Length: 114
Length: 109
Image (cartoon, rainbow over all chains, first blue to last red; front, side, top):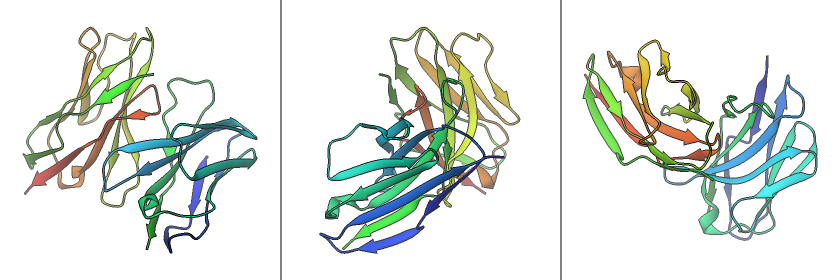
């Protein structure tokens, strides 16, 4: 069966520090991968999605970036965090080419920038 | 790209009663899927139900069902026999990746 791992679960970082959140998927090949941010317990904002290694689409211009160095690994990064980067970050995957495939989410990372 | 609108930020329902959450969307596609997700206090996102646009029949999963009105671009989620464990944020999603702002559902004992 497929599983998705996301870490860390909680992170407190000072303003201006770098960020690296990691997500890995097991049990499937060439998944579509996604990073979402959820602010203040409300809606999900799509940040990045990837359909393959090295292929990253950015939905929202900001100081965050994403990379996919391996088929089932998706990394969210920042060189210098802002206070506004605080939020709950969710990684997700879906079956490629299957419109009826829902998103399968990780447990999320709660990021607090101080 | 689709837009998804959930106009009810919060709702409350008495335990064992039925509640309906609303969602409207906009799309230029002729065939598409719509999803409802649940996010309990643990914040783990869980798929509740999905609806394929070309299917006339409304999807049903146990106590959860949808009322899909394609012409009106509306899909509501009905929860029957509400239970305390149903308390959560509910998100409507279209085009797989576009989410509404969510409805927080409270279950009153």
